[in-house]
Structure formats: structure tokens, C-alpha cells
Image (cartoon, rainbow, N blue to C red; front, side, top):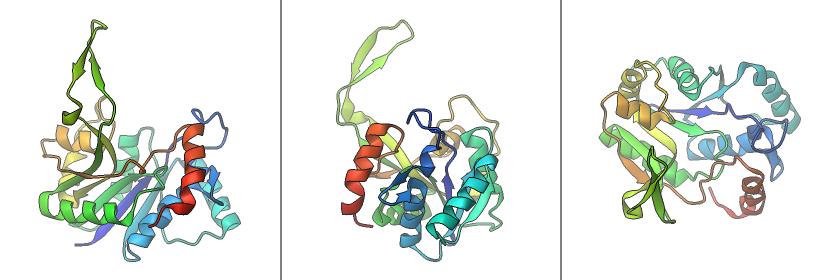
Length: 226
């Protein structure tokens, strides 16, 4: 089956305290987003990669590619006002009637080729594959009354990306109207009535959103293998 990856990079630098969008912040000699794209290219040089960026950031990305001599083959897609709309824009660029599509956060540069491969293989069998890790900390659920109650953390998973799906299933899922509780592709697919299969992610597959995350990335980047 033909394989596609939609890399969504629509963040800002607000939680970083930076005017530079977080995906463009440098770490280990390259912007974070370039590390992420290289991970997917390392998985396969046959993978079709679509990079979804806010329209206003596309010229900035072009300048960064020129500055860093970054020549990875990707198709640039203007994003929408929300993540749902951005993923749908990327999906609309895929002409193939069937295949597999992985959606990944542009600021998760430590995804491994093993996770990517497992995600595609699982989605080919079951229709979906959502990377996740078990919760390490104790969990409490807060009710509408403000009170909380303990939950069994063994029943909780922390969801990551990539989230990978059969293309035909994914297209049907994204025909639904956008809902407020759509926080990721898995929530869209589940809302459309399809089952979600979980696969093992990695605690190191972090989403870089804060200055502390950036410090971790700088320390970790040079020692993590593809």
C-alpha cells in the first residue's frame, strides 16, 4: 500500500515565550521541524510527505530551508484555522484512492523509525494505529462539581502521534462536522464510528511546547538513534 505522512506544524511560540513559532526554533543545529521531517524520511525515501503550515509561515519556511540548505522532498500545504481543518487540507491533497496515512506533530522530533513502521503495519491490518504510552503518575478525574476522584492509572494511556489510518477510512471520518472535543485525529475517527487500535509509543517521543522541553531536546537530540 502507498504510504503518506501529514506533518502538522501550526503552533506559535506563546508557551515558549518566543515570537518565533515553536516548530522553527533551532535545536541541535536545525529547526525542530527539520529534525521531525528527517525522522520520517529516514523511515522511507518512498514515503510521500505533506507538510501543513499556516499560510503566513510558508515564506518563512522557504527562507529557513534556503538558510539551512534543507532539501528534503515534501509537499507544502496551507493549513486551516484549527488542527482539524489543517489535517483535512492535507488529506485533500492525497489523490490515491487507497493507502495508509500517518498524521504527526511537527514538534515531536524524537519519533523513531520503529514507531513509524509499527504504526503503518498495524494500520494496514486493523485500520488504525495510535501511538501512546502508559501513565506513570497517579491520576485523578475532576468532576463538574470541582471534586476529584482517583482513577486506576493502568487503564489510562497518554496519546501521542503518529496516528495512522487506512486512507479510505480516514477520508470517511473527516467528512463529519468539526466538534469542540476534537483534539487529535483519533477523536475524529472514533466520533465517526471507527475503532481505535493503540500501539506502543515512547516516553521520549515528546511534544516540544515549553522552554523546559526545548532544554530536554537540546540534551537528548545527539544521543537518540533513528
